[in-house]
Length: 579
Image 1: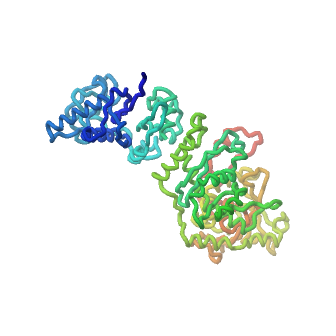
Image 2: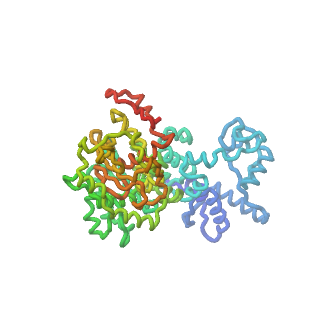
Image 3: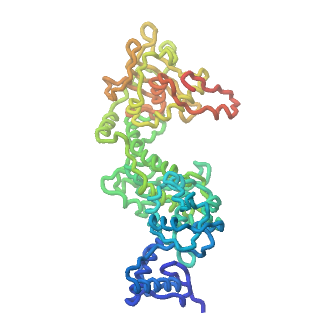
């Protein structure tokens, strides 16, 4: 008759039932207490002792010897004793080129780490310093964080959350080696074969098992997508999915599926506001039925090429809040490079768990997101600014300034524009209500200069009564960010510098009475906004008001353009203000 093997409560080994001993009952109180202490010493999760709990013969004999020793000498101490299967190899790496540890070395280990090393224990030369002492930690915290997204102390805490994992024939424990390898794979996105060599797993299958148990047409490749629910401070409430990426799994369908399963509704309370992107436009009726207040960027009506000022400003208010979701999604891929790469098929069944583990690590060990200057006063200023009409747009439409009438406009270059005020970065941040457009400006300016045959911005100014350039209003024609064939016109009204005097605009006040920039308008989709600016306007303001006054401005490298052949023979950027 074949009996199923049982696991030892202490060492977790598997043995036949006839070799096991019970530790329940009053008669086994001392034995049970020692067994529990030893199990804790092995850093295994707590397990309730029942009539089915048993220990193996070796553990039973060892515990009985300890009980006898305590009875003979109650003053004896229980020590953490280094155990090895044999003394003929190194105590760390099992090498055979070994040296017997000195008494001083063993005493140092006992004093510093409370570990007793028995006599004749050996170590190879790789783990000893010149004084014959065991080396300290070989990996410092800064080096450890290159392998893991957390430091050593956080790793020790995270290990306490690792439960046993069901597997064929029972369950297995997650060891520190397993957890370290899993975090290393998530952090660096290394292949299983490479990890097998580094962590000395016997086979690739064993490596994949350790990783697993440790816990589109749009993209042009097979794709699955997780969905993040994020609080305003960046705390990840939930990661749903992953879902397929076909047309039947769009954002609205995913929202409907989560609502039907009641997984999403548990996060919402009365008067909560849910901020979504335009992909949820088909789920608006569902949100209304659920009584959820929602905010979404405005949709461009059919047969209309531009949002109104109110719609553009409302969209900017929404995107100013929703960037938290995009930032956290970026953090997931930045911290865990595994999630930004093409993932092997055998990891896909565990991908949802991988994403949720990554989100939990970010919540626990990484800071929340704090928006600089985000307070009630700033919010009130933005709401008031969003109510302002676009005066420049009205002027352009009334005066019909979109026409290319050579009798009305004087073409100039930026060197002739001497009365444009100097602007600092802080003022530009305040004007654009953020930093995204400012960071984009160098590459966008360089791209536009390259695409123009004369390598200059096309700047026009209105003629005055004497047919001279009239200061205070300029027009620029600029290429679209997304379409090569599209060009937009933009207008900027500004406060001219008197007698070529430089106005740096450093007062930090957006009041029109003191602001050097009075208004702006662009013919792009969101160019009517008065709260912030589009990328086209911000790039021109950055270049005319800031970059051309600086000695050293870092533009993107043109090495790729110089390296790759261009059949169009387009000229390389040679602007005087560019490297």
